[in-house]
Image 1 (cartoon, rainbow, N blue to C red):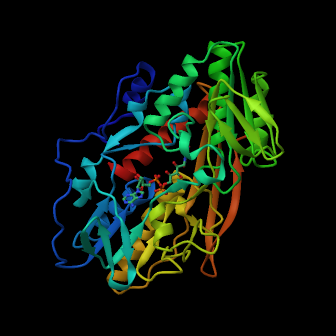
Image 2 (image 1 turned 180 degrees about the vertical axis):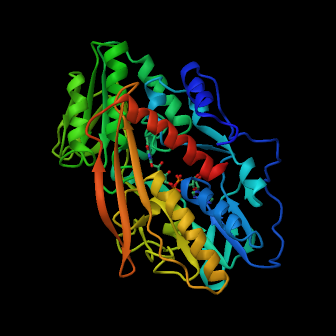
Length: 421
Ligand SMILES: Cc1cc2nc3c(=O)[nH]c(=O)nc-3n(C[C@H](O)[C@H](O)[C@H](O)COP(=O)(O)OP(=O)(O)OC[C@H]3O[C@@H](n4cnc5c(N)ncnc54)[C@H](O)[C@@H]3O)c2cc1C
């Protein structure tokens, strides 16, 4: 994979050295300035995360005559996959942080700005007071939190952390965990499905429990899950939790209130639970721009799309990919967002060229670390039948192992390169 070898990657992980860039040169990253009028076909992409970066790169790979403008406010990309390992101190955040310079080498114009409106009728996006035309728009804004669903949360966002978008909050939560006195209670709350990364909270529970077991053996982790049972890889996670007598799991415990002054959360049954550190993962919906542009369905949360082209069912020439979508039998995962990005790119290029897009199904492999050395995984295979994505099979690893964890490192290394390298 070019500049990052697996050996370097592992070394970076073990010593805390930053990987930081996918072998980036020192290409200048564009900031503001005007986008000129369209001279030929143009694709605009909203969001430089898992879906958007992949889509932007693959449109350029498929047809370099198409102008691609990617809007992403963040100057660096921080990977949510593997970010639970930052909480346990197994990995430094730098090893999950990359810049966008390689995308520019593929001819993607990366602009670190926020798209403020979508105007499908005139095929334009607004970026503040600027207006930018497109032939096709690809929207991959990820998730936004429904703060209003938990009383006391909106006004306490600086104290009650989610760490569900990897970045500064991931490091802050790791610091809170490290500063917690031995004998303390760490409370983690899981929102009702659908939410970003179904197995993610349970992987996080493993990492926090592992950290407490090895560093603060008198402490406890209490997991309050709004769902009835573990949502993903349930038997494998429950087997892994045998090693963690410090972990207590309570299903059907939806948290509806948080009070940082009394350090207490309240469930929908009225039970009050005291914490020393809380990690509250709020309920979620599609990224705000998708909601504002009314790309969401009647639930006002998620966007329905065509299963082959990812064109929105509500707006022509606007394609939605990644976590913001609903209706496909796929998890909200980085692996799926990357696959959707590539498939959508192929479709968009075909449509611009006046050709019929091929019917390509996504795939998904999802790894979860259960301690500092071992992982579990699930693989989903899909096909397109009657214009819809359907699942062919799902396979789980028989148990947790070091070998699966090594595969996870290989997966991450290659998919990060696929998106941004
Ligand atoms: C703790 C954790 C662990 C995870 N582990 C895994 C894993 O092991 N494997 C896996 O496959 N997945 C995993 N995931 C899930 C994965 O991170 C998401 O599914 C993936 O990020 C979705 O990609 P996306 O493109 O939809 O959104 P994102 O990657 O979040 O990208 C959205 C981007 O859009 C930008 N944006 C939003 N609005 C605008 C706007 N108006 N203008 C411009 N830009 C905008 C945002 O800044 C953001 O960068 C994990 C998630 C978490 C939280």
